[in-house]
Length: 300
Image (cartoon, rainbow, N blue to C red; front, side, top):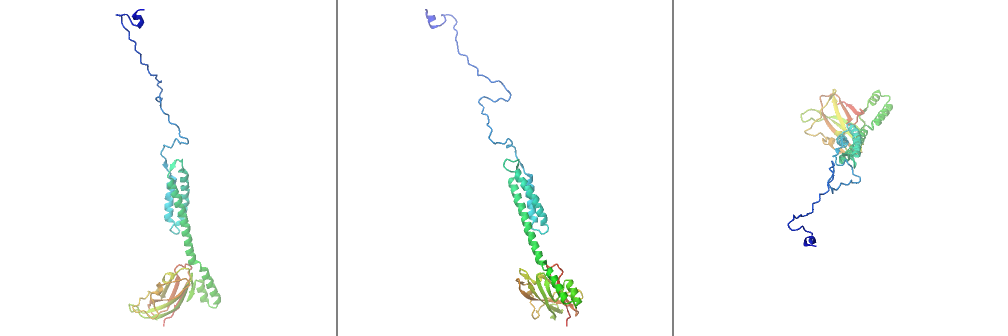
């Protein structure tokens, strides 16, 4: 065997062929529309996930409406009579608030749960305030009018006792009480009316003395709880202002509070027009029954 055969080479002088390895082409994937590249990590679905979670949620209109009605109801609830409207608005607003709570619950399609909660709280509060205010108003009216039936019974009893006196009977029927009587929960008596000293203008005056008892459960002031007036010739007399106070006259007495169950005497001066009789009338400020205490005085 010659050397050329031993080493597997071409004879000297013949063309030499060099063999080199050919690069292998990477396998290609068919071009499929929408196909992902190799080694792509596919997103895994989250258990319990909502495909609509990425969509912005709209604000609940029911929650907003309930909140607005609750605010209006709170404002109106403090006003007597008008607070009836506040109660109705509270009911409607409460319904809207509950609808808003349902719509904004976790996983719901609407947002604004805080507004819905505020709407429910405000509407309930508006209804509660309305009920409390109406109860307080009703109690005040009862205090003012609750004894009107008692006044009527007293007038009827007086009419029976004085059946021989027709004028007394007619006065009792009309609610007028001569000299002394009840005005709601106040007992008032006209003690006297007499000529007095001149006022600051030098005009003659009459000094009328009243005695009253506070039968309410609160402190009262005579000038506030009652309306005391004097008339001559059908015209109301002006109150007198004295530079020198007459004997027994206290200008501050009508402005002083007295406690429940207390009795006080109050004197009020009026400017006279002439020497004609003076009609004195007292009625209750909060007594709408028409009851009054009155008497006519002949001045000496």
